[in-house]
Length: 170
Image (cartoon, rainbow, N blue to C red; front, side):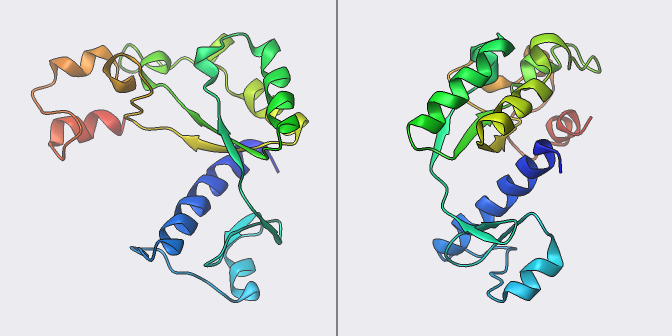
């Protein structure tokens, strides 16, 4: 299984677990029975107490690392190894929309914008990833990670305004 698949499944499951632990079930259901959990998916599941990864209970000890802040893919493995040496088993990361699609419809996923080396470095170091893709990431970046072109939209950003929502779905 590719680490990118695990990333997305772990992100969804960890959010559901956090909601369940806080008693805010929302659309999530806490599934206590292991057999029922396994029927939903086989990589990442959860109950009211923790996340299960491939059937084993896992406690998430997470740090934070943003690949766009260190745009040198050859150094990512070293960072993950140091995170692992500190006792962490997970790293959450932002995906900066403004960098990946500065011009509408021109998505960049090569060079320093290619996340596959980031996923591979994490996998090699034995680190799980939690994706925090936004679209708004704050992260002390200009515009919260929104492409500058959104400022020209006839809508208030971060609302249910149709012009804004349409721009996030392309």
